[in-house]
Each structure stands twice: as C-alpha cells, then as structure tokens.
Image 1 (cartoon, rainbow, N blue to C red):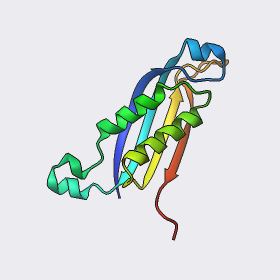
Image 2: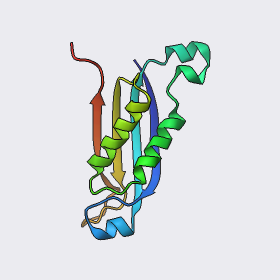
Image 3: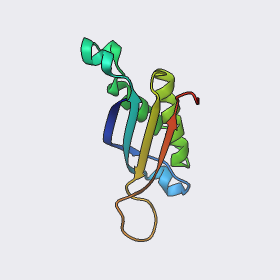
Image 4: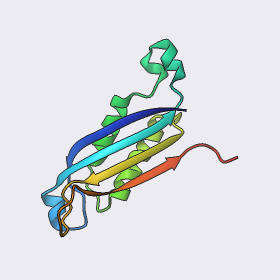
Amino acid sequence: MSRIYLENVKIYAYHGVLPEENSIGTYYILNAELHTDLWKAAGSDDLNDTVSYADINEIIHTEMEIKSKLLEHVAGRIISGIHEKFPQIDYIKLKITKTAPPMKGEMQGAGIELEKSFKPEN
C-alpha cells in the first residue's frame, strides 16, 4: 500500500469548549496519513492518477475554519470531506494538536488522533 502524508500543517483556528478559545484562538498542528494506490501515478506522472495533497490541504483548511467545541468533531469532518472527494482512499489517520491548551503546566500541546479504514470487511 502507498501512503500520502501532510506533516505539521500549522493553522490558526478557534476551537474549544471555553469562550476564550472561541474568541482568542491558537495554533493547531495537523498531521495526516492517507493510504491509497499510487502506482498508476508513479508510471504516468499525471496528477489525475493520484490524490492531490494540495486538495487535501484545502479540505483541512476549510474545515479548520469552522468553529467547533471538540477536536474530535473537526477531525471527523476532515476525514469525511477527504474521503468524499477521494473515495479511492482506503485509510485515513489524522492527528490534531492544540499548541496552547488552556490548562495548568507547560506543554507543547494537547490533541487527538482519529483514524478510519474504508476497506470493506471480509
């Protein structure tokens, strides 16, 4: 199986349960791993034979603009949007990290990882 990655996509957004998270915002770091067959594109050198990571990036940015309380909800929308545009993708793993969560202590971030397989069960 082949993989496409988007690594450490940095986006400023307004997600969270607390009111200040929705008005002040913070940076989020997103990492995506997608499994699909890339061998046709490997031979053809044609964008139509692959999954455009520019299109994946656009879906991520579009969904991150929509304020949500939970990162799980944002990740679910991103995964659904990616698979809707590219149904040939077999598996998606998405990690979203909030870089400045409003919690005690110093940390690089807090976040979630959501993954989904679209392969039919045997």
